[in-house]
Length: 392
Ligand code: MLT
Image (cartoon, rainbow, N blue to C red):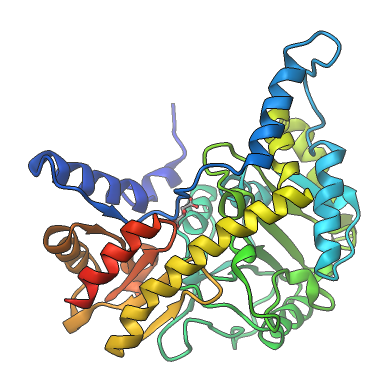
C-alpha cells in the first residue's frame, strides 16, 4: 500500500502536543509542583447556565420517542443558522441561512474548505499563525508561500507585491498567536487584491468576539466585495468555551463564483458526501449563546478573560517590552528577554517560574524569539503569573 507521502512532510509533532509532552515530562520529574497554564488557548470557565440548560433539554428530547431526532441536516439545524444570521445582522452583515454551514469547529473546516479548490492554486499563509493552516495544506500537498508578519509591520503584513494569480490566502484576525487585528482599510486591500487576482480569502474569525474596538472589523463581510472572494470560518470555542462540546460555523456566500461554479452549492454537495452534521446536542447548546440570557453570560466570561489579558499585558507595559495583542484578543505576544530563543524561554519560564506558555517559533519561523501567553487561565493564576513575571 502506498501512503499519502504528504503526511511524512508534517513536522514530527503538532505544536500543542509538543508543549503538552514537555509539560507532562516536567511534572513527572517534579511531582507536586503546581504549574500555571497559560499555554493552549483553552477555556477555564465552565459553560454558562443558558448553554447548560439547553444541552440538558437536548438530551431530554433525545430520550423521548416523541422528540427523538436521528440524522440532522448536514449543513446544520435551521434554528442555529437563523441565530447566526441574526448575529451577523448585529454586525451590519446580511447573510442568508443557506450561506451558513454549521461545523464541529474551526480547526476541521480550515482543512475542509480546501477541498473546494484545486491543488494547483498556491497558498499564502501568514507567518506566524495558527499551525493548523500549514498542516492542512501540507496534507493536501499544496505549494505554500508565506506572508511575513514581523515586529516591523506590527505583525500585520500587507498584500503581496507580486503578480501571482488564484491564490488561497489565509487571514486570521484577531490573529492567533499575535493578537494583532486588521482594520477596515487593511482588510479592504486584501479583498481588492483577491478580486483582482482571482484569489480566495480564508478568513479565520475564531477570535472575533474579543474585538472591543468599534473601528476594527469582526467579519470579512463588513468589507465591500468580500462576498465574492471570501470564506469565513468561526467557532463557539473561544466565545463560549465549546472547546470540548465542539461547534462552529463557516460562511460561504452565494455570490462566490469561480469558473462559473457557485461555491456555496458545491460545498453543500460536498458536505452531503462527507459529513452527517454536528450533534443536535451541541447545536442546541450553541444556539443558547445567542439568547438574551446566553449573550449576557457569555459576555461576562469574555470580560473575565479580557481582564486577565489586561493584567498580563501590564507586565510588558511596566517593563517597556514590545508586545502585541491583549486589547482585542485573548493572547499576549511578546519578545523574549535577552534575545532568548522561544524554546529556551519556554524552558526558563517552566523551570524558574512554573509558568507554561507557547513558544512563538511553533507558529512559524518569524515567531522565533517571541512568546505567547493566553488569558484563558483563571484570574488567580493570571495574577500569580503576573507577579512572577514582574520579577523576571
Ligand atoms: C491555541 O491555543 O492556539 C488554540 O486554542 C488551539 C486551537 O484552537 O486548536
